[in-house]
Image (tube, rainbow, N blue to C red):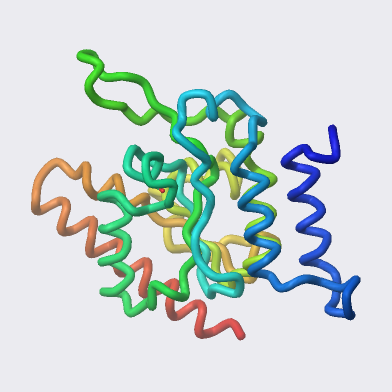
Length: 230
Ligand code: URA
């Protein structure tokens, strides 16, 4: 691994984040560290997904954010704009957070995979989301670990099965275990719920509104959980 390798740069940044503040040789401001990690991730080629993606979509939010919400991978809009959760699923998430009384500024959003994986639709006009492989999730993991190290969220929320199973184990079932606090060393409290995209895919309006309501209830629980951890 060369000294310019993205992971080498990221691990240097993480080391810096771990050091205590102590003059010039000490820890740099978390925002600077996060920006260094973001720059390193921008040139990541640890798996092949960079080849068909427009750009790396790194997480967004403040170091010290109370909540970190982790999805699967950026979608089409996110890939074009280079920002996570800004498409339809992101808009649903923002509205649900507001309904749950969670200030969007207290949330850091990111994904387990930071490049958009897609295949062309039959007529080649649309880019269809493709589920990432385990090897791609594993290759991307150092970036999420770096984000966790710098942001240090009080509550980590896995959105959907890909995030939950990659962070909490293959046997994790969102359908059965959503809204339960999971024992994990990733953050003081770790919870999973559904991915906002699954609500957008509901078969009819009634089911969509039920699923949305359940999602908001999960987020309200997450808000209460954060208040119970100081
Ligand atoms: N879905 C995700 O999982 N992440 C995004 O950033 C957008 C959609």
